[in-house]
Image (cartoon, rainbow, N blue to C red; front, side):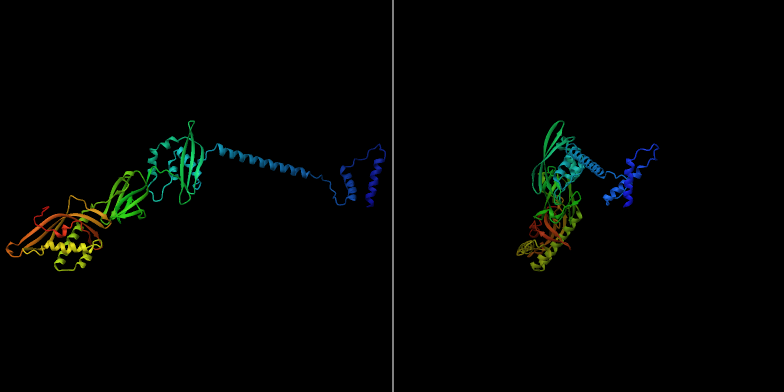
Length: 434
């Protein structure tokens, strides 16, 4: 403490003394500062001595904050410019967000404007189980005026006109060659919650076609699901197609008797088309006819042997034929053919000798396992005169007939008798063919 006081007195004495002619060596400023600082340390001991000047910390922080602020303001300005650009100048022609109806509308119109027809097809609504494809749509585009009119247009605005959970409508204003045109477009939401534009004038809704029941239906080699059968009548299945393009299609029906193809131009005027194919395989018809001949001859043998009608029904007839009808064919019919009860002569040894395909008529497939066949048959028999055996004679009859047979695992059964004379008519004067 004393040394510090003496040093202070010495400094004061030197300030009051006269100047000596011979100058003393100059003291560096650094020597005086510690002394002055030492005095301060007496008064404020908490301040440390230093010989380094402190930087202006507060000013540097303010400058750094200003710098950061200016950077953020600049960045915000850029963002605002980008937003304005995308809002007023940029045309968003990217893929649509399918869950956003307005985005789909915009993308659909840009695809039309730029003739991106593949993208257009992706944006249109296609009902479930529909029979339309991109080729159908491209064919439609080539003949539709709208798509040629909107090419090279600019979208001015897209305004929502109504909105429900599954349907929306927008008015789209396009500008081309200085002229503005408004187009209305509807959208529907599908099961995946995606929106699609409704363009339903290039296909037909609920188009119908009838085919033999139980048969398989193919359209352009694609099998049609049986879930589309809406009605079954007269051994026919009525298919209702939710959507099918108005164009030519190859329809194929496959049954136990074979398959047939037919080219049909689908149009509104022929909804309800009945496609009942005929059997084109002669072997199939011949097999059915040979089964019929066997059934007829066996029935007559059973009749001659006195077999009960109930056993006859289950053996030769389908469940579709009633017992009363079987009695009519079996008992009443064969009684008449045999001329039973006539006192003058009887017909004996009755045999269906041969059976042929009727060349003038088609043999139609009624269902997957039912066939209607047209044929000629020849029956030979003996005319037995009761009182004069010398006049007995061998006779025959030929005539044309038809019948419906159902194919079973083993063979065939009679499904429907379409000509009752087959079982109750026998006259040698009848010879419809040689």
